[in-house]
Amino acid sequence: MSETVFTFPRYPLLVVLSGPAGAGKDSVIRRMKERGLPFHFVVTATDRPPRPGEVHGVDYFFLSTEEFLRLEREGELLEHAVVYGQHKGVPKQQIREAFASGKDVVMRVDVQGAATIRRLAPEAVLIFLTAESGEELARRLEQRGTDPPEQLIQRIGKLAEEMACLDLFDYVVVNREGQLDRAVDQIVAIMEAEHCRVRPRRVQL
Amino acid sequence: MSETVFTFPRYPLLVVLSGPAGAGKDSVIRRMKERGLPFHFVVTATDRPPRPGEVHGVDYFFLSTEEFLRLEREGELLEHAVVYGQHKGVPKQQIREAFASGKDVVMRVDVQGAATIRRLAPEAVLIFLTAESGEELARRLEQRGTDPPEQLIQRIGKLAEEMACLDLFDYVVVNREGQLDRAVDQIVAIMEAEHCRVRPRRVQL
Image (cartoon, rainbow over all chains, first blue to last red; front, side, top):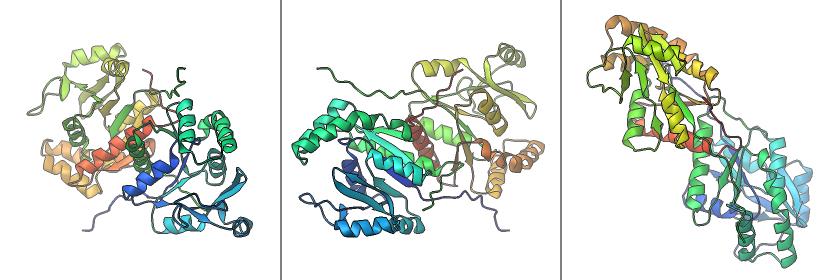
């Protein structure tokens, strides 16, 4: 006699990691990659020049403005925005491919971008990453030292506005100073829990 | 200058582990206790006699029918039912005390009981535990060998009905044969994720 196995549908997740500048989105994703977690990490397209050490196809797809605008015109960007005068956007195709192979997709966007994704893909799992205080966020931005002074001031000025967007998100993870692994553990737990939902979220692009 | 630390409310969870007979609710809770997890595990009150090896105040509060009915009359049971001719119920007071000390509470009830708790404490986190197939559930019940034959038949007959209650729950965890720790890991991840919710569930009793 063959067994009647219970089947519960399992859909790949679209996990959106966002939050104010200085929260540590890049560090969290770098640590997730170091752990070898079996997720697809979205590579964002941008027309800004690479920072020292950044690699095309790994950190970003560094496109010309013309190439970027072509993708946008063709509706092939899940989310795109002009941030500090530079284009950034998430090409859809890689997400479709990851989903087809059953992989969860993890992406990082700023808070504005998260709002767009909530609208375009309401079943996405939105995680708000933050430091433990506004002062800590500002301190990290200053220490990073990658932004020219006027851009730094602009970023710090936006922090309060970004914090006010918390309500848009499903989960909040506090990336405390020196506790990066704890933040990563919480994100992994959130993804595990989402796969156990009786009413799973199914993202369609 | 003192820092303005972001505060996100943290409410203790009421986690209800339920599912059909044979799913392994007792085994899962035993393993959670062995791991020393910092939760309060609810002790159910019953007027049935102890099975061999069961300890009063640990496995159950073994009460006389009269004592049990007094708690029920005083509204001091979160959930109570007559199951196979025996009273079972969850005294509220221990949950209030655990909450007051900030502890998450984990309890085990049958599927009927879970429906009652959904009604009385809608903010509880309801987890449906099951084996991988109906045949596996029936096999485990037979192997347990603790029920008299007529009660065993009654339990097996209820399995389909219990499986149909899945929709009442928030999460489903499949306790596969030989993978008890995997099931426990998933439950712990669910609890971790629930504590990260932007809109936390707050149970009030």
